[in-house]
Length: 268
Ligand SMILES: Nc1ncnc2c1ncn2[C@@H]1O[C@H](COP(=O)(O)OP(=O)(O)OP(=O)(O)O)[C@@H](O)[C@H]1O
Ligand SMILES: [Mg+2]
Image (cartoon, rainbow, N blue to C red; front, side, top):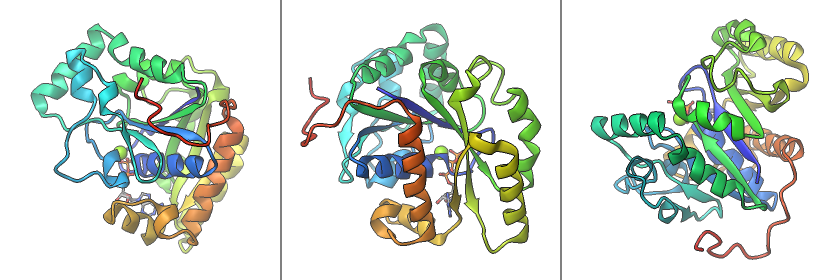
């Protein structure tokens, strides 16, 4: 039932990394989780061990109005994955046009997933404003904005406070209670990173849901196409991810308890 969107005004801050690893953290808390890739970069799959040559996904299917359910995969981590699929320029434009003219091509499938009362859907969005965010933010229980603990992250505060960020569409009408922020790549060995993290924590108060340390183990997990809690469960970032999972689980509406065996729950 709950939908969590992960977005950011700036690219490369760790949205995809957090989508994959937070989905894993929630799954380890006993939840049924589906991670959905709404970014044409099609990178979310890499965290779950999908081979590079496997480029299939539901994005091109949405453009065609085809059947998207067949693109849901069960991953070794136990998280269900809906990869975006690799698209060329023409397909990307076709998809963008389709969503502009027929928003239900995306909102329909998302609503269908949300109708499952025991499922948490975590969606990875492209950087900056996007049609996808515009369409699904109103359906979401939480929009999580990822920021870096650096000067750029600090400079975004007036925009975030006023709601004038990520475009005037999607987030403008969001109830403030649904917007949460996470600091990623906090470098505890850096004076600037620490100072910004402390200042942002003071400024944001309860809107700040958590902070994730910058550690090689996070990037190395991606290099191994695996998840941090699996490859480096004792590192600082793993601890941070578990805490973030707990904060998210507490903040989201409670889904119905997951059945003991997940099985092929989507095959219906
Ligand atoms: N906490 C972290 N510690 C170390 N490296 C990290 C951390 N988080 C993310 N990274 C690395 O930063 C890079 C960018 O991360 P990621 O692709 O998740 O960002 P993104 O916001 O999804 O990017 P884009 O805007 O292009 O979609 C990756 O190489 C990733 O491994
Ligand atoms: Mg990304």
